[in-house]
Length: 191
Image (tube, rainbow, N blue to C red):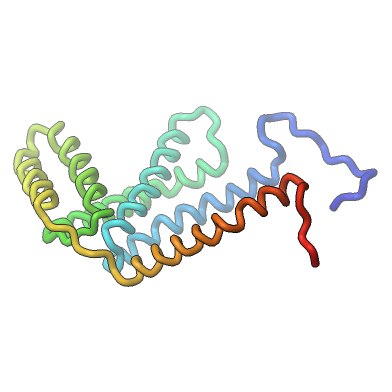
């Protein structure tokens, strides 16, 4: 805590202080690094993990596009813009890996809608190009395969995590009223 006689300067802009901005600027590079790590380990990821990685990369690419069009982009967006080529390569690598998994689909009930949405987005892009008639046919074939494939059961790890989540939710349901009273100041714990 700060001594009472020291006052912190008020910010003149919409940002609270330059420190959080600087910290986020450093984190922007870490965010890009985390997104690029997905490309290194795509062989070990399920469609669910790849979909999450693709979403992260796409959000970073949107920020890079915004920074490219802005008159005065924020420093953290400039960091992302500087690594846009790497992000584009990562995006194509993740898409290739997702396409490889969809050749012989063995999807869980969670992955099936993600696969259908991914293929539908790719199909929409391919339909805009008149020269991509073979790609459109291939994507429609993959979409049909995904729709026809029977869902596979979740792995043991996923089932164990879901069971522990249910158990924790049940425990929280018992403790939540006491916690709410404590937060409101109507109850105190005896030590």
